[in-house]
Amino acid sequence: MTTVTTTKVTHDEADVRLDRWFKRHHPGLTHGRLQKLLRSGQVRVDGKRVKANARLVPGQMVRIPPLNLDNVETASDRPTVERNKPAVSDEDAEALRQSVLYMDDDVIAINKPPGLAVQGGTGIGRNIDDMLDVLRFDAKERPRLVHRLDKDTSGVLLLGRTATSTASLAETFRSKTARKVYWAVIVGVTEPAAGKINLSISKLPGHKGERVVPDADGGKRAVTLFRTVERASRKASWMVLEPQTGRTHQLRVHMSYLGTPILGDGKYGASDAFLQGPGLSRKLHLHARAIRVPHPRQGTLEVVAPLSEHMRATWRFLGFDEKLEADPFIDLEPES
Image 1 (cartoon, helix red, strand yellow):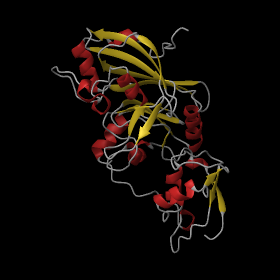
Image 2: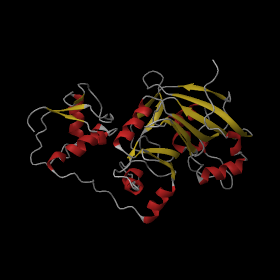
Image 3: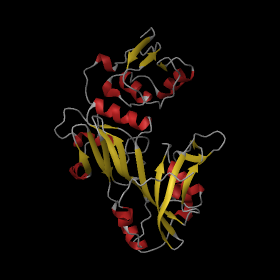
């Protein structure tokens, strides 16, 4: 290609990251060169400068400068085929099917287990994105991710079964009309027992993986509502957390900032994030308990995910009663 071209983002590319879009259409373009083209403004989306991790919306126009990729086949030059994915074991396939909480013609909701990544990346093997064909069932299209959860976080994860429903659900998350409620166990107690955390945070790169830190001056706005349900003396508390913004590791950083890290979160709480006791797991105790979103066709979709096994064991050990929180959507907004 020796001239500037523009390409329209299609419906089946909804919510795809820009760098992954380029890898699909121009596999010969290295990530480093793409970054240079983005920094210089030669690659733009709808005429605007963007970053490599920008998520695309159907109908957007991607400006592509001359790439001079001699003898490199692009996506438009070859038949459309599914990218090579590792084989899914029968055990993984059955476990993923058993995790389905809700399904209709537009949406699938699963209860993501802790320790399973949502997408692949450096050092990540098994991940849900590579196994989505298992959840095709009778649909013509492969389901698509709508949002993400941390690898070690369990709970409700939504998938779109069509390009249209995926785009609709993705817009719901972008426009913040989705309501996400998390359950967590923290080490210690918060004072007050309920409130709002308004603390900007920033990402820091590192050889041990991405890390997020409080950054009141230059960080991105991050807001979390919290409420204590039960306490086990002063050593641990069952918390309901509701993020008002969708920042990476937001809940974990906010709880650690209060001096009450989430149980099992060694990344942000170090040794303070662990308790001793028979049956107390060292896994992260953060669970995406419930999601409420406008359904892509009509009405409202509400999905609630049962606790993972290690968290259920902790509830028993600490004497917490799940029945105390029968309604996952109790309003957490503190009174002004």
